[in-house]
Length: 113
Picture 1 (cartoon, helix red, strand yellow):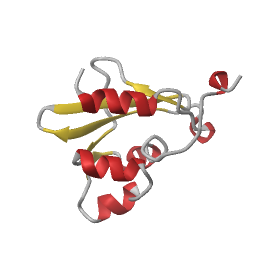
Picture 2 (cartoon, helix red, strand yellow):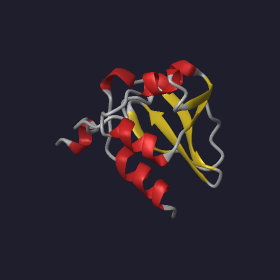
Picture 3 (cartoon, helix red, strand yellow):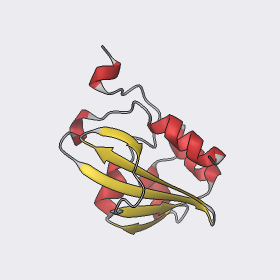
């Protein structure tokens, strides 16, 4: 497993956003030519998508930009507007992934029990 895939998997594990209940979206994160991780929202929970999942959008950025977004030093939408992050596909779906690409304590309901 690539370090970037492990990092994103660890970041997404246990994340939950109640505002996204009932939502199923898939977003690929392209960090370099050979580092691509596909993340999904499934009923408000975030995780790594299964092999062959159909993507709603793709975000392309450097690992440094990804980490700045995760640490809250850079807003995802602002980074897109500045050209630091490329987006292909459904911009609305990309906006939903701001929750996983920003630090916070949101955990799935079963993780808080």
